[in-house]
Amino acid sequence: MPPGVTARRIETSAGIFAILEALPVSGVAERWPALLVPGYTGSKEDFIAILQTLAQAGRRVVAMDLRGQYQSPGPEDPAAYSCAALGADVDTIATAVSGGDPVHLLGHSFGGLVTRESVLDGTAKLASYTLMSSGPAGIVGPREQVGRAMLDELTTLGVEHIWTTRVEPEAIRAGVSDEIVAFLRRRLLAASPTGLLTMGRAVLNAADRVDELCQSGLATLVLYGEHDDGWPPALQSEMAHQLDADCVVVPGAAHSPAVEAPETTAAALTRFWNAAESEILHR
Image (cartoon, rainbow, N blue to C red; front, side):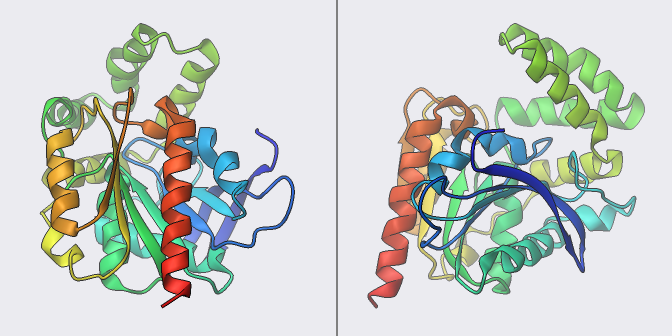
């Protein structure tokens, strides 16, 4: 674990959630905190490469597992994995980590579909909102085709089959280290099968809610890799225009800028968060 990053659990009225928490190695957390929410089949570890860099700007940064992901337990009730239900969980965690301050909220990929529920319900006290490699509605393009095939296989053949025939071969082709491959296996097999099915359907079939987000009045950033193979970059650019949001394209990155270009991604987030705080404080 990087210096200043701690793994722990938060017990809430909504259940127990596993988090990674980063604090400045030197100095104190004077700025408002941030909460990072992962995508489908992801986990808090997807942000580990940027946590300490973000924290060194003077803030507490928390990455969470959604319920049913990796180390956060989840029930067998499919209703618990709707975007609205998961968004309510995000509200709960945001309140728990805020210390009374507004929170910078970020959702990656499917996490963007979840966190927009938090923005729209207005429960959590938010300072800004970042959509990272996410889109206005259900995912399209190559990942949509893969997702639909994977859901069919999950229903009939199970999670172990998905690992053996899809995730492991893809990781090996990408040159992922044995240590990370072992982690990816633990993570996928620890996920709730009910959650994987329900969240997978939401990734594919989510409705467009950009018009509603336009009414939030919240400072918003749309950030994505120039080679994103999830929602097409042009679609994310158009969404940013509709939202009148800041837009950052990360050179060389694809669907996971926090992994593929961590320093560039962390710098863009810190600039945006600092500017959002300054604007609120000087109103």
